[in-house]
Image (tube, rainbow, N blue to C red):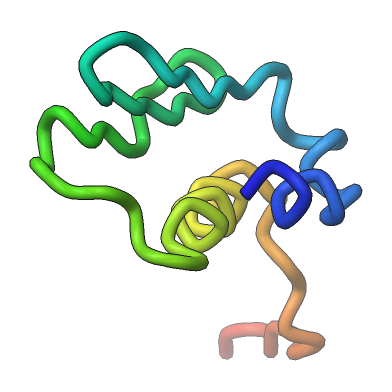
Length: 77
């Protein structure tokens, strides 16, 4: 799972910190910049393959600057 996440170098630009916290009793939590994105304890299940990466991508979408559509505004008459 960490290899999947660390292979995406873009996260370094937008994420100050991220943690995968395995713990006693099978607790597993994933946080980005202090925000909990996944908790095995809360969901009662293991993360599916690619699920953590998808949650990271969704979070990155909120951190990336808005992309220009290439359209130009037309002056109002």
